[in-house]
Length: 265
Image 1 (cartoon, one colour):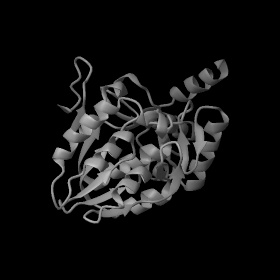
Image 2 (cartoon, helix red, strand yellow; image 1 turned 180 degrees about the horizontal axis):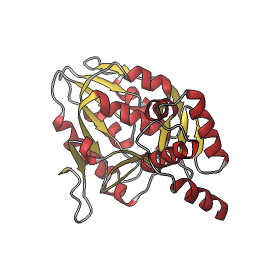
Image 3 (cartoon, rainbow, N blue to C red; image 1 turned 45 degrees about the horizontal axis):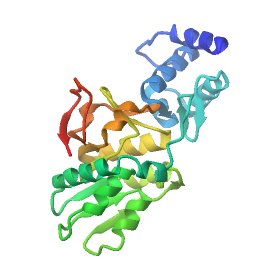
Image 4 (spheres, rainbow, N blue to C red; image 1 turned 60 degrees about the vertical axis):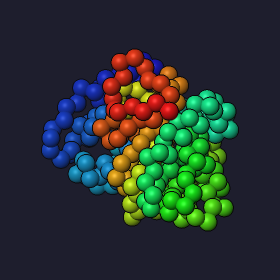
């Protein structure tokens, strides 16, 4: 631990130059700051942000991972520490009444004849069950349980997004999922969260966070849905700040919370 702390302090002393990162310590310090903020960074994003080659980025990530400062994952690097989400079946049984009430409040924001995106999660699954009939909806989702709920409904145009299947979240993620979402457009996104706090929305894994960010990017408005327990939980990867969200639909918020418009379900 002492050695890791010394390495963090070494990189932390490096300053941003505001120019192309030709100096390796400066690059690695910038990478560490990005991962500290977001919990994850894609190698392709670093190539553009740092103005260096893909090979250079890969070498930097290998060095940081070798020093124990980041965790190497497919396509990039993540913060060290726990990365697994609580299994879906366990989460489904938690705060079930609150999730039903939140879902009922959330579906009131669905506009007939529009495209809706459902993030993966137990509360968004409840929304899938309550989507109004005969509203002419198109629903886009990477959540396998939501796909299973909506598949028998002929009045819903269902677009299931595939990729690498995650058994804990019962959803698809990874590069294939991101690519499939690149050319879609939706009116309303219902976004789930592993954890919430005054600064924004958090996810459990790099793939989960990247998928959420892509969904936010293709949606005209984002509505976060989550029960009050999420304010007492923690997760390693920041997905977005409240400035990216139109409203939060929940059952309660901590005293003094003012991050975004709140609707109590």
